[in-house]
Length: 233
Length: 233
DNA sequence: TGATTTTTAGAGTAATTACTCTAGGAGTCA
DNA sequence: TGACTCCTAGAGTAATTACTCTAAAAATCA
Image (cartoon, rainbow over all chains, first blue to last red; front, side, top):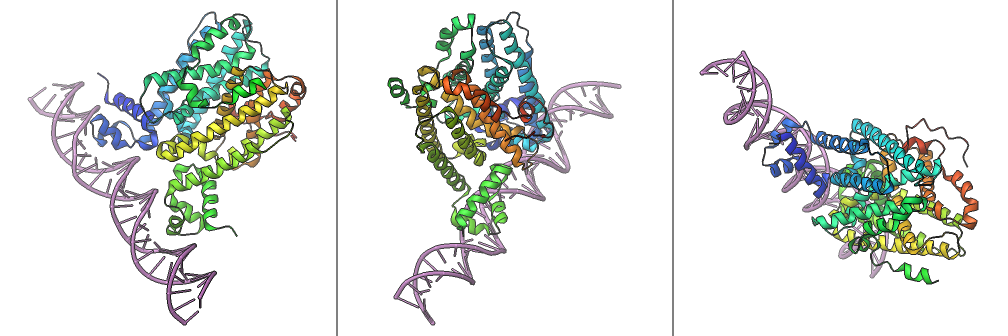
């Protein structure tokens, strides 16, 4: 049986993701759990510590994934790997959604977050570096850095962005998954021009796999008709 | 002399950007202006309408920029043009920072925002389409779409992301400008592999111009080293 | 068992905050 | 002048909300 502390975190996470941290009061969390506010405050000094604890879980989660050894790295494996990362980030999407507020409100959290980003980028550079060594991507140092930053911006913003555009807080798991796949698709778009050898062979297959069939393109590229025209001109 | 209504909007914008909309109360806005809360509420039914009015200003601002005719389009011009867009977005950065909350709280605003994004993407596709027609970028339809989405994600997230990482709310104009230039640099990184002809010739020059000398690697890829900008023009 | 510590309930509070209401000044037009 | 509208002040309020306090149940230990 999970401890009360754990249950508070789990419920908070669910509510934060669904309603947005700003709209979830501590009383609301307690009520959802069927415990008293006093009990909640016995386990967490204040609301901020709940957020901080969730960030800890989030960052541990992500860093663990990033530490995982992987033997010979192919582009396909790497992409699948990124898919896992994005899924983890989606689980804690409330965090990136209100990131600036949290960092503004909690100096210590800000420092931990900064360190976290540094490690993520560092590790990401290693991964891309390995791909380069294997001749899978063809980039110079500068392009590698640019690519890494863009990948991170995309991943860390994707959830919030997509969450803002999707139809009303309908808890549609199928849609969510499709949106995450679209995120990976966009990363593939980032990498595509640099891909060589093995990766190039799998490119179309991978694009097809992650390309959002209907719903996703509908969301971001709605009824944008621009392409038919520019193609023929 | 600007009307009270305008002054309320201006002050709100300033405070929202600096403190975050969440931390700025209506009383606070009134106080900053030296007017009474009652007066504020005479001009705006509630806080949400202030946000909505600011979004209107923001979207009009951006759409006007996007409508601007431009004659023959070079990559250099386009990049300079994007710089203007990003600067406008930076002026209203509070909006993208709390975007999901605003959309969640105001159905009508959500609809307007969705329409806004559609127009922006549409217009962006036209611009990239023109570059393609001129042989400046070499992409197929699918790559064009992918590029467009990534550009938009990058631009609309950049302010919030960077704001979260920069040192404490120091109102450092020089730093801000450097960060915006870095945003353009990242877009250049997105486009670089597709560039041909004229653009390719100006690539290094443009990269040099927008590359943040210290701050780039500093903010996102390391620690901020006191901002020692060596003669940049 | 009794003693002690951990966990819980739940009423309560101080502070905040979005917003209201009334009354009156200030400009305009007759 | 008076009447009418626009604008402003500022006291006040209802509701929310993060958080406290006391006491008791439950678990742990001697």
